[in-house]
Image 1 (cartoon, helix red, strand yellow):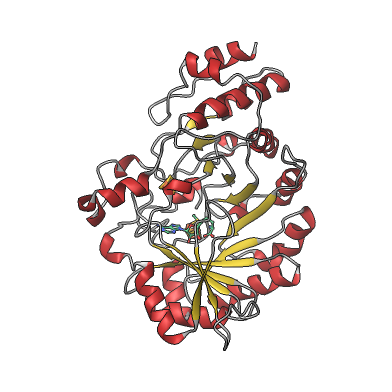
Image 2: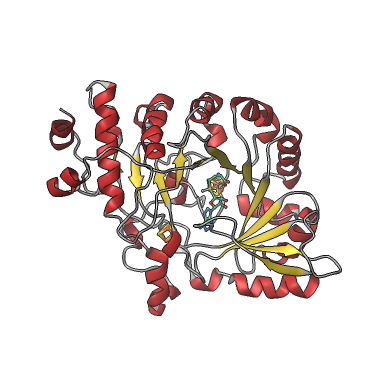
Length: 392
Ligand code: SAM
Ligand code: SF4
Ligand code: SF4
């Protein structure tokens, strides 16, 4: 029955969708989930990023530039969004296949009504080893003051807040909706008071726009228990006008920071970690854990595809295997097939296994090998999904 479901009801293809794995792949993928799934390059499935809305109250120029995302922008209708129950049913199968970390994102995830209900459901999931999920969320922080306590009570453990500078004029220009820095800082305080932690702060750097904010940001959060991560401006999607010239390579930032701060390299904490870690050193040259650390996410200058263990689920239930993918797999069709829940679960499990096993995405690594494509976007850019649709 589940086999029939996959072949006849679940069409994982359309103009922007990838085709269903071949019958041979599906037959091969028939075994039960073991939590040990690897892709065609030997990368396990560990991290699932779930976008819960494609809407946002900010218009960051590197993500949702105002000129493109206007008031009449065709956002997804409510009926297209996965319900919380559908998200949880899909996530349960990802967890059975090895996912240990779940990140809620968007758009702005805190705009999704009753998000706490979804967090409660996801917090109850357990790995095949009966361990709880590492459950986190990325937010622009604008609604955190109001929501931090409810998020914690629902079972959220930690979170990442995006903040692109401390200078109010610079930050208001970057979010392009005149949102003040002080309200994001108040949100971060509220999250700390609610016991959410460790907290990370993401800062995207655009040359000539906020690079002068890097040192003040590092200094401000030093010793606060909060880790700032400096992110290279990426060529995601097709509407943010990306040019290589706007990217400040992490190596340059590190050089500037080391001239002012005592930094030492720290080892990665886990396989597939996106950030390179640098800690503040004490007088003996050892890591001063109270002073904390900073991180660099160098997706443009130093690709980390070789260890990429992340899958992404869009707001409407499309599974993407890479941030730069232009085709997804329609998992919503499976959960809305009308078949009994147990059949859908099995169909999801079989599909996930087959899809992940044949994954070979490594966009950033390939871009790094084709220097000409580094100057501007490559020819596939027009079809690529937007960051606000799939989440970071
Ligand atoms: N709205 C939330 C926020 O801003 O934190 C969550 C979604 S946002 C798409 C997730 C992360 O992606 C944010 O930290 C954001 O700064 C980052 N981001 C968005 N566009 C980017 C780009 N072109 N290059 C690098 N990072 C980007
Ligand atoms: Fe919104 Fe986050 Fe994109 Fe900024 S980065 S526009 S806050 S989704
Ligand atoms: Fe992973 Fe794709 Fe980014 Fe490479 S480019 S690290 S495969 S998301």
